[in-house]
Length: 146
Image (cartoon, rainbow, N blue to C red; front, side, top):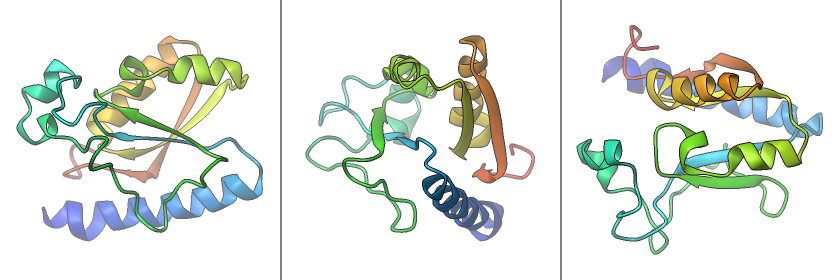
């Protein structure tokens, strides 16, 4: 817990904020993905999440997920995709959107490095995208997991 709250998450937030500002200035497409069920009772979340305790009770339409003030999408400009599984490619239309935008290269940030980030990166690479993980804009529960 000490590593996560004192080191990993503050570093991830700070560096994601910096990267987001740079991407916006450079007119790079930014897509936010976040955990949120499509139903209030979370019946649509993945089996893995249903079996994982806390992840079986995601925010839903009546109580939506909230973004940190320094890492918040610009309404109407940046795409936001709620996801209900570890890999964003499994529970969203992200691949379809990226192909429509003619995106070939991805910069991936987020949490948890050894779970959602890793799953998304592996799926993206298998789908033919060039992927860069921005290490210092990712976080995990421990240094070993990062």
